[in-house]
Image 1: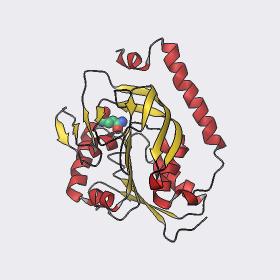
Image 2: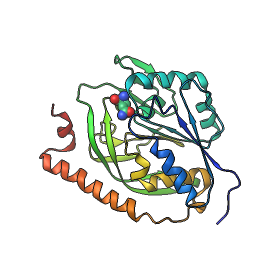
Image 3: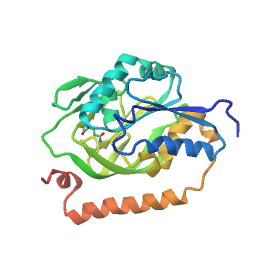
Image 4: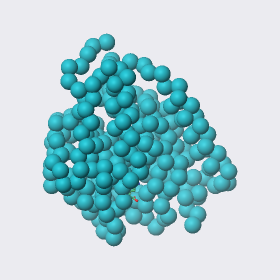
Length: 263
Ligand code: GLN
């Protein structure tokens, strides 16, 4: 194992605008998983109206309501810092509203299309369907790790709560395929463009999906530094949540999309 001289700098963006669904826990998961491996981490929390640093290694953008997400998009566009960070190779993990504003357009609170940041190749729109609310489970997912390796993540589990539906563009890949729930709305879940990863999974997502947490950290510190941890507790949680999601689907007598369409 090699070592790392500098602390991993994690930036949590606008938690008061994009923190409604507990996604701030993702920063805690990442910093704890680093600390357990004796790797230093600094968490920088940036509030609305504050300057966004462009020198962090990993940026976290959470979910939120339609109005606040429009404000967050405007501020990030004006700042330019997230674009500079991504150009430098920073990793971004964005959840729900966070993913939507990183795409090229998304609906505001009045359903009017707003320009997104263009860091993820996707568009989000309103559809004539009820909100997607409930457990979200994918089949086995993978992401591309350092050096182009394929990193297995297992099924991704979380909960979703969103009105918008997202379509990935030709240069993006989905994070996974939906087994239970709605995700993007077309059978896929999440959008990946380079080192920018978006998902509809709340939970917080990285507490329920430790391999995804380590995949993000691996992009920053390299997989060699990520010594194995005792993840028995999170594996037990994952098993329980996957069973609950499948039970809910089977118990409803409908497939996942029918379940969401019922008024
Ligand atoms: N406001 C967005 C929507 O409803 C995102 C919601 C969220 O972040 N959970 O589609």
